[in-house]
Length: 210
Image 1: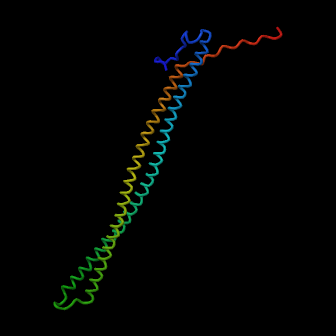
Image 2 (image 1 turned 30 degrees about the vertical axis):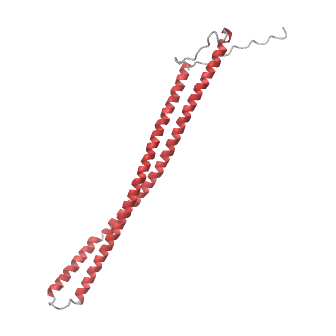
Image 3 (image 1 turned 90 degrees about the vertical axis):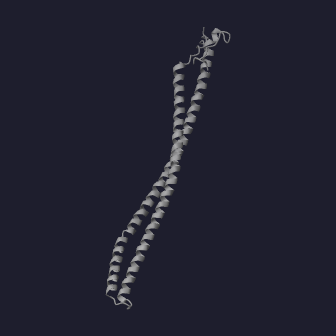
């Protein structure tokens, strides 16, 4: 390509003056073909980067769906844990009342006399309530552990999704850059190369009747 961006004209030594138009048309056609090949190559590379960006975005969307599902499951598990613990205050109140009754019975009991069956029955009821409270606490803690594991898994997948989004962003930038270069080359070619010179019309055949 010439340094000035102009289509080089043939030198007098290269072609006779009568063939100047034909040579100029040939060179202009060759230059148009070369620039067309450059533009199509740039657009091909741009389309390739656009395709890679779309694939990365689709992968990121797929991973983000997993993240949302895991977060939803974790939220449900935490809600179940909170609901399980909601009965613990009521059980604690029941244990407190039973302990108060046991202490009151112990005050009126004679020394050296074993507690009556009523007292031991209260002790068993209090122990059962303590066992229920411990079971609910264990269940709630297990649900929170599962929720924490789901949240951790969601965080790890979110990191992968962010990485794919970054890849998509880079490919989008590359696609845009190659497309702009192709557009600039197209505009430069349109502005530099005028209409194709028409070939000189061939002389019409002589009338055979003449």
